[in-house]
Amino acid sequence: MMQKSGAHILVVDDEPSIQRALRTILTRHDYQVEVAESGRQAIASFARRRPDLILLDLGLPDMNGLEVIREIRAQASTPIVVLSVRGAERDKVAALDLGADDYLTKPFGVDELLARIRVGLRHAARPSLGAAPVFRTGDLEVDIEHRRVSVGGHELHLTPTEYQLLKAFVTHPNKVLTDQMLLREVWGPDYGAEAHYLHVYVARLRKKIESDPREPLYVITEPGVGYRLLAEER
Image (cartoon, rainbow, N blue to C red; front, side, top):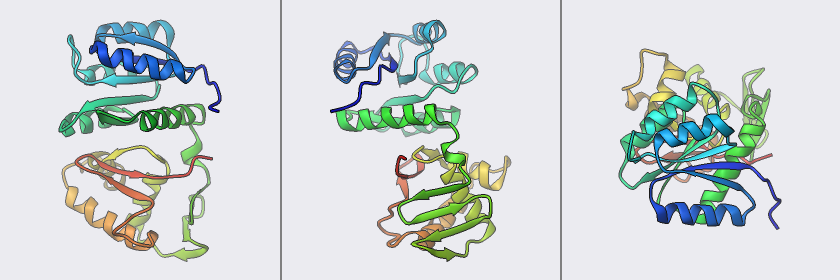
């Protein structure tokens, strides 16, 4: 039986059917739910009650959902899970670059929605999780303090760039990182369009940390968006 969390979730969506479905699903799992039908209403609701997590549709009647993300990120680091229609990859990438924590493509499964919410709430409760001195998931261990990486107890040799790329992943576990975000974090602020650099180094990194680079267990591709490091929740 799921433990009652009582977390307050702000649902921002102008479709009545989606509102009803999300309210039913979330209240059934003991979340407190508030609904906003527009961007301005969402910003006002956020300022008034400060929810624990926001489910945000990008297609709002009065303003772009990206503006809502920008407004909220100027005030707080509250987890934001974007709800996006299929094919809207540019909007999803832009949302993640602005600071959204995750995205779901409509139509989405209930179990996946609840899992993404749980991850967002856990990360909000433990913001330093990704910056722990030693990161472990599965057979992968990254000792950030000593810059050591091992898989199954066997130490690996990574180039400086490969290590910086892996560090970017382990400091943001389970979060979607866009190509642009990774390029800027690893190569510097002047980079952002050189996606071929990133793809080459992700392939090299997978060859070293994955048992089968063609079926990665750790660094997975989010098609059209970027990458995500799958990590066990502790």
